[in-house]
Image (cartoon, rainbow, N blue to C red; front, side):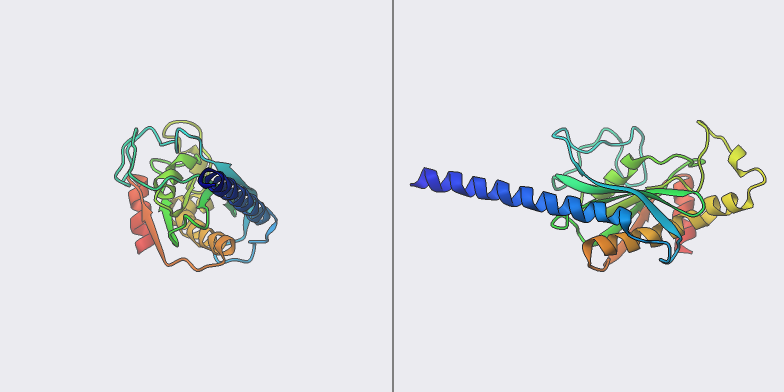
Length: 210
């Protein structure tokens, strides 16, 4: 009888987890159909939203140090995030972002922004994982433009709007939109928001504080 009850409890737990996962998948996918054009900082568009299961090897880390306090490879002593809602989109004109939303049960009701470094220009979702691991809704961006490899700044020639985004605006509007998306997903307000970065990311932190 004891063995039977144990097996029954395992089966019930697996069924509950599968049900929760399916509900999260529907809730996550619904973000791609919502209109975020009128939110503060917008217009914004979500181009994709899907639930991703974290592999048994764990989250993938960037291959360089960041101001978050960790240098790759790292194994932070954080909770095991099993899945998250991966949201990709942009804020007009070219502020691309990736926002990773942990399962509602894992969310700590906070937002974490990992700012891009150097000349930015690429969207590296691995930067979100520093905040995702301890349960933050975690976001990063391309700094307001796309660029070639290396320290390319040709994107800024004759483009004052892109220069303005790179200088300060991108971080601000992506933060506002990320807050709106997270609040919509969790149906709960964000208690606190944090930002970290080094090099250009450090400048982004100071500009956003100002």
